[in-house]
Image (tube, rainbow, N blue to C red; front, side, top):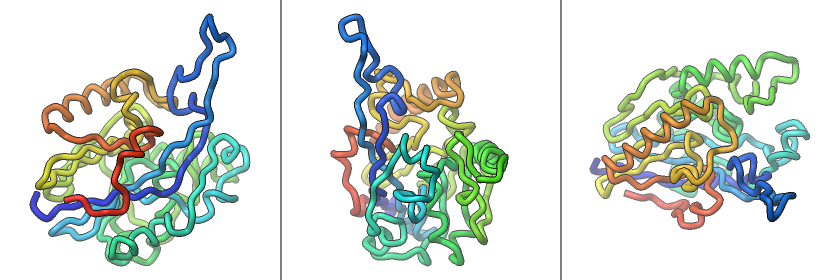
Length: 272
């Protein structure tokens, strides 16, 4: 679509044992019975979309303030710490791209895990907070797991403070949709009850952002399964669908948490 652009934003880095992200990575063998599970660095990302009709649209919003310090319980930060500076939170990233949180017209949350939805707090009082699109099955699952106890957190990666954002109106999606001309959302199983994948049809070509439905090139190729899978059969269906779409559209894949591919991505610039 003419006039459609996007910018990929780097929202800091996460760190964990590689086995959390890739099943079998570093497992022991007969020659090395102890195995090696390397401590892995991976990117945290979101996408800013500039649409000729709809204006600025977010696809995920990165981390909430203090995610590198005390926003999550100590146990979670031990398994999955993050690093970022103030310039990598969504409000400052938008400024660097020539806009602000007040310019955003809609927010798409691929799924409600903490590293994708935490930045919603930066949009309190804006028009965008009234137009937050989420996958219905994932949102419902996240509500349960973030409200089952007094601490507002469970081991399912959902947090009450991320779900209960002041003024937020959530638009629930349960099927594929062309949200705006040139901006498609597809429902993908596997990683969580549902992930909204993004397809952008730019004048220069097509891009697919599968979010955590397929987090890295080594998962897309079949070399490794993701380490976090809600539904293993659903994941296989999602992977088959993504491969088919990639071929049909001759699309470039942008993977969410790829420890290797991200070094080749272009961050902080508009791609048309």
